[in-house]
Length: 129
Image (cartoon, rainbow, N blue to C red):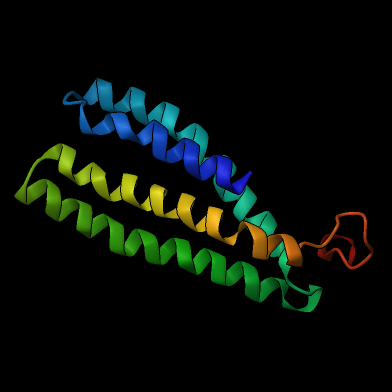
């Protein structure tokens, strides 16, 4: 799901480099958002399954921090590209980030599979009180 969401986001963001009108951008972002939510949900679910219950809060905090750092780096980078080059150049930051996320999900797929905790096991963090 993480791989699919990240890949869908990258593919659905790609048309942004060709769109020059605000309504066109709104339509593309509406559809691209359909890939973002599943990727975020899958990422947080994966983070919660890969760690012991005692480390769940720390795992989710690191995941949230990574998202915040991505926004903190991506927003000014995109803004600078828009100011110095063009509107479509600014969208390359988001497209590149989604592509990097897709590649990371592909490369990490095997190692994550070895650490995955079956949802039916009693060590599932959501089943702990």
